[in-house]
Image (tube, rainbow, N blue to C red; front, top):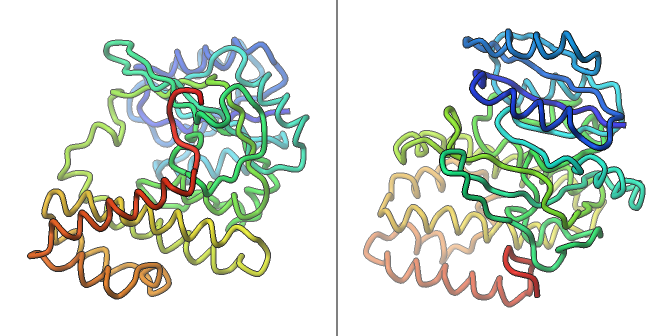
Length: 331
């Protein structure tokens, strides 16, 4: 039924918790494919010991090539039709796979099934439930591009293998991309079929774990801008290639503008015009066409910083007026 794909790089300090969460699932028809991406700690020793006592676990060793290649390797090696992604520092509650199986049985023609997560600080144990209020405690098809950032993250998502293999020959996670590789994959998948929101928080996203991007300094995050630009250009190009095949393009463009403006306003708040200029110098023409000429001139004019931020806030109010689902308390 499920192939659980876990990319692993230097997570010896937490991988036992992750594997325990998988092996104690109430639904047991699965295999675990761990792709050891050249770990230099004792991760391999730990997982090998656990795998020796459970035939469902397979270990693939490769030289370090990054999380995208590790996930792609796991997908291509999977024996089952449904890929349950799980990062090596995240966990599931015991009923996760069972609930995902129910969702697949209800909507077998979809391509993505995902649930909300508990976001937990690994240091103090505090957790919050990141559920979309509209779909809470329901299993139903949702319009993914209404709010992709609030849809399930990588460790709370199951994908049909056949759909993953349709994107770049199975390299659905862009090799070499150091951030946004999961959105690059899911945003393209969402054009290929339905997304099913499973409104039960059954995954745990652990924050504050050593080695996570969330732990990078602002300066280190700025160095990722090249990969963020690649994400925008890649998803925009894929959208254009799918416009004649789907009715999702218009909704995608609304999201694209919202997300790009959000990126820009973060830079404007820091008065980081080097970042703003990098975006406009490196985004593809198709990506830039999503913003008006007025906007582009406004955002690059340092004397109009306050007005530029005010304009983006106004567009966010318009976005909210669409009634798109948000994270929050039940309606």
